[in-house]
Length: 202
Image (cartoon, rainbow, N blue to C red; front, side):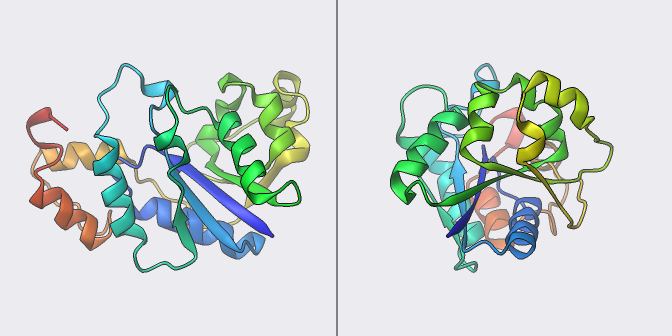
């Protein structure tokens, strides 16, 4: 069985996440895409992040019409920072060593992959399914010198390029601008009802 893993803060989950997941599933013939919301994102320890329950509720709404997209609470239940390498080890224990795991990311994430926690271990545990993003490119030869073995792990996925970010969506909400078309309608309604991201607050 081949599984796609899509991790993130999902604050909020947006249509870019759904497009990435759909493109990866189609290109790689994945049985399932597992969305894993981060409990305590290690790269955002000093940044305000919406409560886990809020982000989980939005993600459930976003995926409600996608039966092949499921949610794992693995990182939400784990204490301390959410490191990808720990998550992949736990997934292999759950899914079995025969499971073929593709960690889905954008080209912008691959650009900084050498700075991730234990990147050399990550490429032993999964393939990196990478989608292009406007304005980002990666010199794989340079990255291979920084993280030996990464080149053999990278699979570039053809798919729609998008330029949607959760930070821009939050900013639009704060400015009172529409987010129609950027997030699923149910997520937009949740944000409005709960007055998320207003007045600079989460």
